[in-house]
Length: 271
Ligand code: MG
Image (cartoon, rainbow, N blue to C red; front, side, top):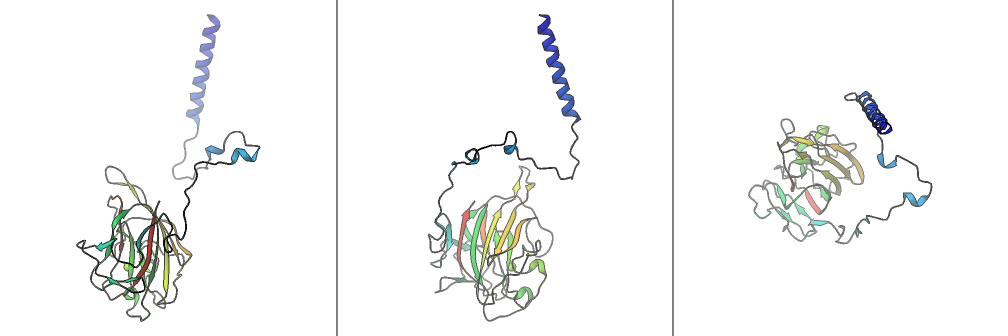
């Protein structure tokens, strides 16, 4: 019995010591970066190659050019055949933009923005756009359009060749939030590509943002937005706003000043 009680006492002492040790650990200093510990690589280090080789889960197989240039698992939003996946933003009516014989579409001036009927969250987006070879207008009024993720976050489309404007509103900017890392436009009148990776912001039940959205943009193969933080919406006037939202449409802009911007080959992969 005495041994048993002594054992209990020893255990209790040990527990209390451990508690004390835990309490005495230094509190992280607010704002100071903490060392990163990868828990999965703690413990005894493997000594054979097989111990660090995994066979599951197996990633899906995707055919990269299965649908006329789009990957086999992509949602093709525009392949030149028609506007069945799109509608006018203002009244959800049929698209009034021009459908061209070469498989592209062109903004019909002052008809309004268009958007997809389907809504998307996190996506990889591919599209191609072209400013008209015959230039018109200056600054923000030369082939201004835009690609809006979730309908409210704009990646700028603009003919910036020999055409300066404010840099946080230039081609491939996150409009009035992030200046692109480079200007990678092709000559005016030729087709540009945008490859965009978008992650939505997250909101709590009170409608407050608890995690910012992010955007990565590759313009003609050049990284121009490197996983930048979305600070909110991208208004022309005023601060970014952060209305709570879920999935939203992909929206293309009619700037209303004879932009004549064309688009083609638009597809998304949901992430
Ligand atoms: Mg624009």
